[in-house]
Length: 413
Image 1 (cartoon, rainbow, N blue to C red):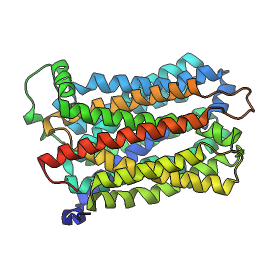
Image 2 (image 1 turned 45 degrees about the vertical axis):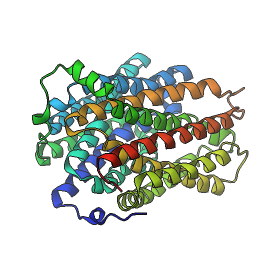
Image 3 (image 1 turned 90 degrees about the vertical axis):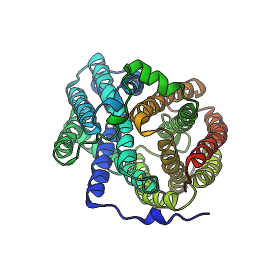
């Protein structure tokens, strides 16, 4: 593998600040989404929700986030990225505050829709900021650190969220997230420098034309398809992960927070390592190796029966390693697809597709999975594993096309 000497270029003090701000922003957004699942039983009992209603409340965020991405894609490149981040992060905070005051099903769904409309775009804005401020040779490390928000939300989010909900009510968990995000948005407003270099590259055209021109480019569509495939494969097993662990593997409810926390700690260790490797070596090769690793682990895991807890933890760490080792290099590769003038629109569409694909994956998984009673094992879970493997094979081919396309423009590692 070719080693890129530029991969070792140190970050400036300001770049380190940007990485921290984007990582902590990612932490709050992911935490807001993830905290719903472990609080499911508390929520359903507190406001008398049926399982189907709780499912709608969870998916409301994903679908509204997907719609928001499409709506904002046309004008995302016309504004200072700092102002765009402040606007949508402020809306996310308002939506999360509304969640903390919801007292019935419809109010909760409305609050989740508002939160998704704003929160669903923040990831794409962050990606555009990373692409504007950091070189391609630095982005693997940056994305590794920023995506640590995912792991940190598992390590801290689930245990703390459950602790707060159990002691002060489920409303308090959302209030905690909103207050934390409010502090962060103030720091962003004071410390982040305006990001406007892309504005001078814009042509005078309507938002819809910009959206269509971005979506209609063949090279961009390859990136969009790769994003959708990765998202469907990534989200398909997620909604029923806890139910499978409890009903099939016989993990107790008391053990679940520990399982998530250990997996999260593992992700915090794995992310920066993978980021550095993807800056030093060929990003596609790392992605392909991680995908093969993940396919093997998924086929083993989805076919398990009653399993000792220590082995469940070990396999979850192996699976997390595969997932994260795909995520960082694929994100870095896809970020290099758009030209600067189209980055905001491209990232918005990409973020939208991630959310919509996640909603489709969860819905499809719900159709495939069968559970005869509340206590019986989940049936057809191995079928999900097979689908994830097939999607991973197609994703390898699509990322190969993305990598080859970028290398034709300029050498990458």
